[in-house]
Length: 212
Image (cartoon, rainbow, N blue to C red; front, side, top):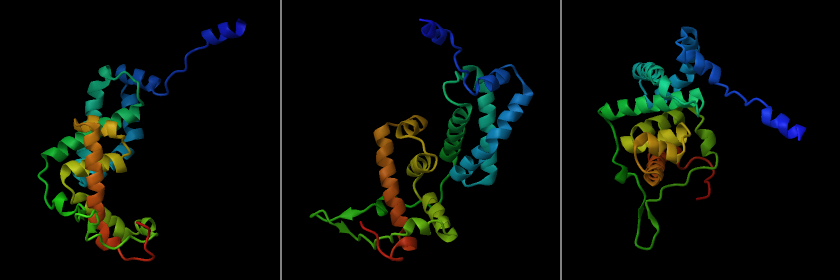
């Protein structure tokens, strides 16, 4: 009985961001400076990956902090502040990408695998080596990967970035893009196939072939 009463009267743990949120909502300028200092580096890295333009990335981060400050009264604190900021930033980047006129995109249909009537692939290409992932660490191949991602159509590129680079779930990507989760999975599958086709010249035929 005493144990039950003690357990019932135990204080509820305070969320780690609760104190910071309270200070922000009270208009504490030092708290806002702390928020920017702690999160700006990671957010800038995200914006750079998505926008591939330093000036635009910096503007997107600044815009995200401004939007977050204005949205503080509506933020209920169910997620960590860093997660909330990440979502705001991703949305700011997506808006910029939609407005940007894309150049150098490759038609996805040209990159997707083709199949014969019996189900075998046409132009399957050479298998990648078992050490392909290790080769991705090489500077020239990392550059090839970034360039290949840039050549994907925007809607497929965004899904690939959000799922495979930023680590969002299909449901989170669907919410960010305003589409269904199954559409996210389909675009991701096609984007990965296209990305492999674009990377084949860099990785195919090197070392010992890996199993298909």
